[in-house]
Amino acid sequence: MINEILLGLGVGAALGLTGSGGVLAVPALILGLGFSLPEAVPVSLIAIGSASLIGTVEGLRKGLVRYRAALVMAVFGMLLSPLGIYLSQVLPNDLMMILFCGLLFFIVVRMVRQARSDAVSADEMTSPLEHNCMLREDTGRFQWNPRCFSTLSGIGGVAGLFSGMLGVGGGFLIVPGVRHFSNLGMHGIVATSLAVITLISAGTITLTLLHGVTIAERSWYFIAATITGLVVSRFFAPRIPPHALQWGFAALASLVAVSMLAKTLIPMFNAGFNAG
Image (cartoon, rainbow, N blue to C red):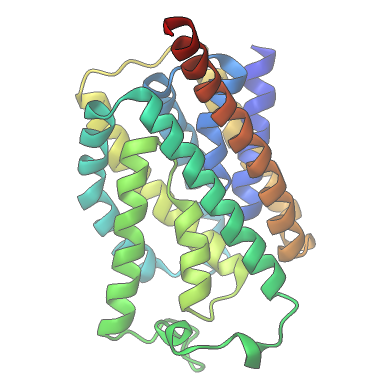
């Protein structure tokens, strides 16, 4: 029970501080608690979705959630999550683990690039793509047009695909994607990301449970701790510079990716060596 609680608190804190820390739930369950990937996916989604719901309510109360953008991303995410669930059932487990590690390394690269870009002036950072979704100065809401709609729907769709396949929530794509293609502030991005994760996770969890997946009793300690970690971390999030959060998360995700890759590849090499 102690391990479930400590790991859940850590995942919840990462999710609350960065909006994409939910990607660490599956590694925590696999490396820390000995779950297999198929066992970890539904638990991860319940933990991430429940914790994100708390953050979403807080974000709505503070006016940080861009709810129309969240709904667009969530709808397309839920449309593609069944494809992710199907892929998770037909692809070999070792291949899924390697894909997950590749995903973590991708997140690390994105986080490092964005953390470094904080030191670059706004004039040097702008490009035509970064104007896809811009906030209106008079309302503070997105100025909707076909380019903005297609950008957000694409981000949501890919996030839903990975949620169904790997149980990762999707914040790792939503946060950097919205940050790159809009001028929404980081705290608004995190709050909006949590809203999307809540909706996508709810839809994906429902589909997963309908496939007959059961949740182990000890998983609920992890889920409850994840919710607690997010609630506590949200009090500290505004006091921590965004680039510091990004560097810290990148370092942690790198360590997790290397550990999971070693856990997957070493037995494969040993089996091949023994067979030879």
